[in-house]
Length: 289
Image (cartoon, rainbow, N blue to C red; front, side, top):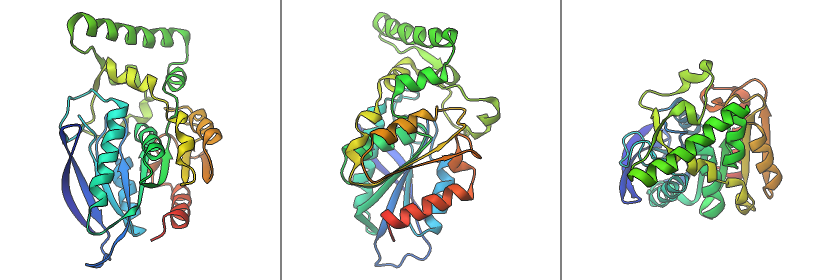
């Protein structure tokens, strides 16, 4: 395996990433490639990024992982994560990777976890250069997702009041209201170990509003006739499982949905062999080496 640190420009900022080449890649060979997208406020060193890259490399794929705008080593305002900016970042990553001398530009797939999964679905829908899309623990309707994550009337009032305060603060001061991570996306104590060092812990209220307004399920049907794989825990303690169920209902063919009762939200970081057997078989069918 060979890793190449790379950078490319997106939204007038330099984003930093890593291209990983399989060790058996020949000097004049081109192969399919997969872009691995990190989750909310995370970075390219998260386990649910490094784990998939390692597995995909053993399967023979070239991978690219990178830090979204404002995350990790990439430039951009810290904590101001706008969903459509991340879609744009992903499209620019596609452009970069398509020019790599070892990559088949017509055979580039996307795989993302959580926030990265929602971005993968949206980018895969609007950009026909995406040959295949995999969503793990993703979401398609921001407002409905947040209602599931803030389920009691008291929790929902607190969350929506924060959005209103953020808008008022911006109008009054011209500055963003900063909000703690857990007030936007609560994570059970037992899963907090999955938050990689260097992850952002504060975000602008505009970040939450962007997620609230984001609706990948409105465009998911546009992925067809290209393939889509939806993976979700049936007992997901972060993103409600109904999010993938609804995207499956709206998606065209070929779309596969798999629910797992023995994993939780960060399934790509868990090394679950049952999950990876399904991913492997699906990739070999739709994005063969």
